[in-house]
Length: 357
Image 1 (cartoon, rainbow, N blue to C red):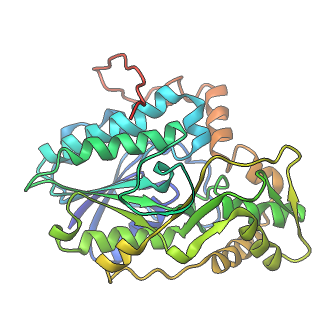
Image 2 (image 1 turned 90 degrees about the vertical axis):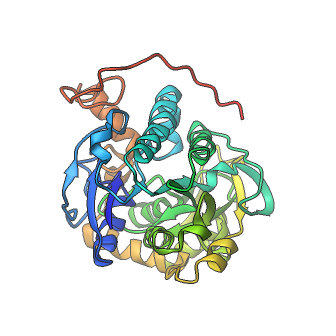
């Protein structure tokens, strides 16, 4: 297959691309590469690419492909909160626009990288794909809206699938430190403290980015009729943890560290436990290989090899929100988060946020 991967230079994209190539697929990337100065460790595997903001994608960009892996977007809650209007424009409207163009271009398979954050406030109960949406952030709302609108595009020729990823972790050349396990190991290694910013009680399902990539590939390879217009929680049911349990794993792995709570630590309303049995039962080809302990060991080894410092992971090099603010401050990005001097779409309209579900 000839596959377009949007966000191919992001945290997950740089992992899934070589895995797709190993499967024999021809892969082209599409990315504005906001984090071109943020590569961690080894370099990024280069492929043919379209350097473009996803808001500016045109029909011609999508012609000739068999499938789209849509990963691109503002990647976390702090970025979403920076400017909720831009989250609405980039994560929601641009994603739906790309899906419509993909359908018009005759692309038959569209895999959307959604999130378990769509469940938001679910508490102690285990949630399956038929659970009510209850997002609490612009990021979570944007994922819900894309799923709802792209699902309406499905027909005999256009087949979308929605992958609701658990909280990701794991090593990547475009490493993110805003993710809970990556962050806890970084604090432990650089300061000797496993620094917890909540009271440690919220539940989170976590999944390694290589296993997310395996899920995408398993869905791509699956018979169309069993994944058509379906949502799948992506992760492993046994990998639901309270934050304090993840901290204990990190404390066991990183020598000489201890668990430390922030002074203003309190409960986090984002709390959800997720059932992943549908993915396992529907797609036996999906074989996850990671768990939290193995992931923490992988991260600790990488941080030692690179010589990670507190300034690195809390500063603008690797912290997404800090890097974006730096690019805005030095004028390299405009207020819409586009590169200055980059080609922009000629037709723009004013948009109003409406996150009422």
